[in-house]
Length: 342
Image (tube, rainbow, N blue to C red):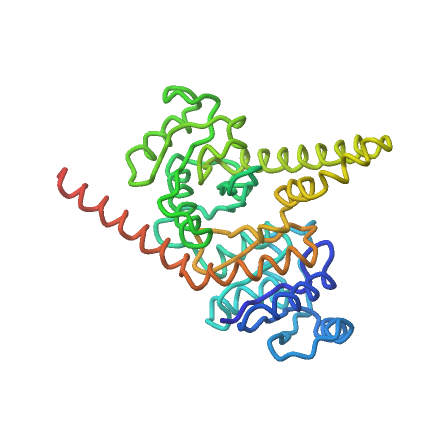
């Protein structure tokens, strides 16, 4: 397997990217390809004392920043690390591309360079959603599509279920639709129509779920439009950080509370770890003809390492091919039903 890694994307690139790549290289037998400014990446590999043969460099002279127009940048910056990485996946020179760079550029590149899986109208960003005391859920979509049609939400449920099964190891995962009430008749025209499609599908659909129930591990795959999903993930992240800051402040306020914090240190570290996005790896962009993983823009070396490790089952379990096969079956079944109605 060849794991392609954007050496220039993210707030802490390229240092943390290289450090994370070195950490992951010691745990897998696959090749890691760093894409970016060759001289700088070589210097960093030497600085961190890497002497192995599982990391190589492909030069990219340009970088796409977050403040550029994603479509224009992908079309014009052919020598950027993002465009080169996706082109290598398309041409069979790499099995998966990982980046902490511009989300917009990754989505645009996924559409223009790799193309959509047949039957999928819109790719989606799937993010692991932390659930304290339980296995995490998968939230789909978290920002790729601000406006959706009912079929898009059905597709998100299908793709999320496949990823949850193949990569996160949960068979027949439950699927819930985010709504402003659990009753079937509640919601907007979009959620009502999506509920009907999901209910008729072969997915393990449990119905509508409210945002307040997400932390109760009410379902494995959380389906919503990208606008709502992005608000949910950022609100959860902000609330988690606020709670951790407040706990730290309270525990450091007196000698007595400091002693209590010492006694609870293992439990507090466990809670912090469950909130830490770095532990879960990157978010897959599902629905394109290639394996893509988007890391948080502020990813540190630990996040890079974990994303590389998560990329291995993503490729080995052929998630992209499985999504394609599932959509082909659905299209064929719809065609048969149409013929029967005629």
